[in-house]
Image (cartoon, rainbow, N blue to C red; front, side):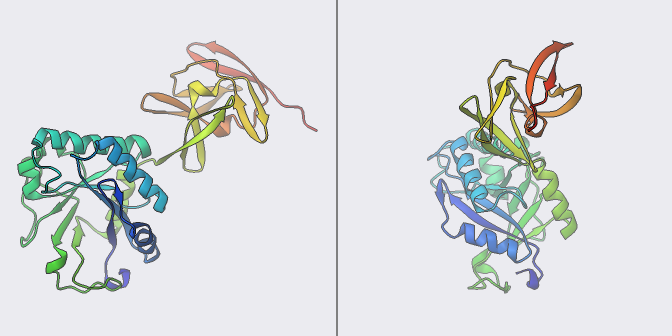
Amino acid sequence: MAKGGYSFAIGRALYGLAPDTSFAANYAATKKAGLVRGGYQFARPKLSTAQAAATAMVKEIEGAGGFDGLPPAIDAEYGTDVQGLSPEELTDWVLTWIAEVRALTGVRGMLYTSTAFLTECLQPERLKDVPLWISSYSVSQPPNAGPITQYNLWQHTAGLNSQLKVPGIAPYNQIDLNVFAGTVAELKSWCEGVNGVQATPMKVIVHGQTVDAYAIGDQVYLLWKDAGLQDKKVDNVWHFEPQHQVVETKVKVNGAESQAFVVDGDTYVNWAALKNIGILTDLKIDGEFNFTVTPNATK
């Protein structure tokens, strides 16, 4: 596909909550072909909550290789799955899906829809800040939708009507064609900006209990209130006895400021700042916890 002059490809990851069995292979092949890749989920709001749909989408993308290209998209369009729902209800569902994806991953989602559906079945004024992938055929450019005058992606040709050949895709005329509003370099820059910091949820053992943590880049962050500050290493795993609930986003270890961050109101501390410490005693000074570390004895 890249040899044919194409720069990105988006495949269906789920139909509602049902995974597309070919998505993982297609997702990997897209990256191997040198294209910016992405995935979308067909929305079925009458059959599942937005939170459940977002959780399924995140699981599918992460299982296929992770978020490293286009933002994940929710596909909202005409059909029995949306009949009877008001524009307010549908917009609430879409915005909740986007918020849940962001909360789970740090990645901002995108909406795929048609200009007709956007104006008739959704509330465009509430979606003007959401990345938009619009479908609009047989026009020189997509029409405005209320306050929305620009789109990030435009699907300009439906698969059954396409006469263009795409190398690597058979049959050639069964693929929808899309364009990005910019150059390839701008596409990649936009993807990085939309995705922002990617946080992958994971688990860490704290005082014998499994607690939430996040991997960001090559670092692992755990919930600060669960870090506690009496620690011991057992079977190469650090265990902490919870003692304090702390809301600061910066902490000090041995007088040095340690990086921390907030996820949904919870503060996480850099695991690397704690993994090599010995016995800790703590003192709260001016609203900050400061730790004096007694190094473990070396053999």
